[in-house]
Every structure is written in C-alpha cells, then in structure tokens.
Image 1 (cartoon, one colour):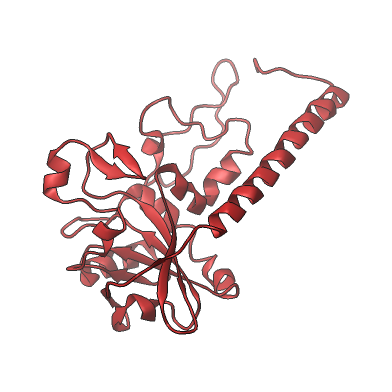
Image 2: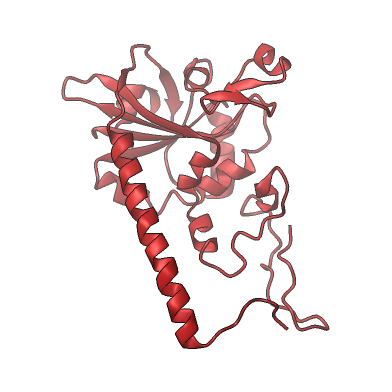
Length: 253
C-alpha cells in the first residue's frame, strides 16, 4: 500500500499547474545562465598539444575536424588502468546518438584520456562506442585543464578542482570543456565544467528525475555508487516484484 499523498484528478491538476510554473521559471533561469556562459571571455590556447588518435597524431586544432566548435569529455582513464571510470562511462554511453546532431550545429565531440591509445582502444571496443577518443599521454593537457593531478598534489590530501579546494583525493577527475577556433585558425578555451556540472552528459538522470522514485540514490557521499559499466549490470534489469505488502523492491546496487 502506498504511503504517498493521493488526490482526485482535479486536485492533481491544481498541484501540477503550480509545478509547471516552477518548471517554467527554472527553464527561464537556465536560459539566463546559458547566456552568461556564452558571454564568458575566451582564453587563447597558446600551448600546442598533440594527441594520439585513430587517424594518427593530431593537434588540438586538428581535432575540430573542420568545424568551429570542439566539445571535449575529459574521460578518466589513466595509464595502466584496466578499465575506464564507471561514471565517465555512464556519461559516454549517451554520446553516440548525439554526435550527428552536434555536427549539424558546428560541434565536434572528442573524448580525451591520459591512457595510451592502445589502452583506450581496448576499452572502447569492449564498450562498443563509436565516438572519437584520443590520448593525451605524455602531454600537459589533462593537468592544464584541471582534471589530472600529480602525485605531489594528491599527497597533500586536497586538490584544486572545480575552481576551488576539493576535499576528495584522486589523481583523475571528470570534466567537460568547450573550445572555439576562429577563421584565422586560433583556438580559444571558452568553458569547462566539473563535479556535478558533468551531469550535462547524463541524459539518463534527466529521465530518472521525471519518475516517482527519482534517482533513487542512497544518502551517501558518492551518489553514483549504483552505476556500473553497461556490460557489468545483472543480465536482467530489476523489475517489479511484490513482497508481502505488495511493494516494489529497491533497485539493485
């Protein structure tokens, strides 16, 4: 038996209209933030970064692939790791369906990791992804854009991540960065987001937020503890099973 508030259709509609007003206000505020994001000053990228990719060695400028805008997922896969970060993989699972649409809005998508290319390719094949993924191995790219940290930085117990002091220890953290290339071929860093900002790539969360149980995540520090690589979940997803009280079981972790 449900313990949630129930109501007539008329009462539900009244509450829904109140929520609709809040949703519209949120959408307007989101548009305002997007305008502020586009108004950020741009920083010239003066250092030349060279990446290993499926087409060979390429500079950051060449990764644009003839377009003016480049969107980068800073994917947590360090040299020697057996597999990529589960959270970054959750993000990447949403990419392949987007790339054609991004391309038609003058945006090229690329994932970048510190791991050598052969290591990246092994994991990419396992996961079945088709998007472009290159290696920044041997460059300062990940460090310069605030997603990788040296052993000395990690040893201090606090790192500078997400534009502030980050209390969690780790040499790799996720991020999303945007770049622009002008007609003269000059490249500019326009935006980066970290922490919960990377949820922009997690379309599944947007769908879960519509559901009665929401994200259904435990009240713990690491909310995404339930996430698995998509080939590591149980073969069958949890389904509704009735217990003695007739309620749905909790989703498996």
